[in-house]
Structure formats: structure tokens, C-alpha cells
Image 1: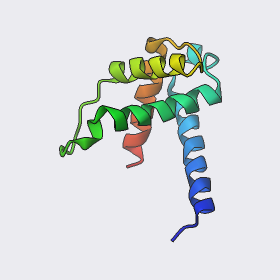
Image 2: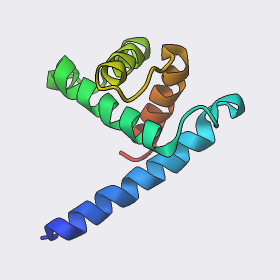
Image 3: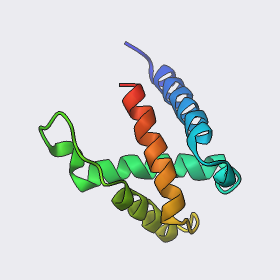
Length: 106
């Protein structure tokens, strides 16, 4: 059984791998729009959306995810938390890259 420190390191490594993947997938003109901290916040907000929306509660093997709804949720959360004001159209690309990363690493 892994220790808590090992689990934290493993989670941090996975976050850094996903961050690098997202950076490689978003359009070139957006690469300077988001800091690493912005993208990490967006990644956390995406996970939060999945848990709070009930999308993970279904018994279906495959679930349709409305990426526009996820992007809008992320933008709303960021604004409410005073993290920043993001354009949902830009965040959409990050949501899409996040899903691609998750699908590749199942």
C-alpha cells in the first residue's frame, strides 16, 4: 500500500503530465492565454463538475459529456472564486484536451 506522500507525488506527476498534454493540444494562439496555474485550476474545476453534475452516477459504460456546459461551469466557478475571467470558447479547448488525456490514460 502506498503512503500518503507517495500518493501525493503520484498525483502531482499525473497533473504535470496532463498539463503538458493540454499545452500541446491547445491552439498556438492560446498558449500564452493561460498560465500553468490557470490550467491546473481548470483541470480541478472539470473534475468538480463531473462530481457535482451527477454525470458519474450513471451506470452506462459510455457517457456523453457536453463540453460547452463544462466550459461554462468552469468559467462561472473561476469568476466566483476570483481566479479570473475566462472565455468559455477558450476553455472549451482545455476541456476537450482534458477528455482526450483521460481517454488515453484509462
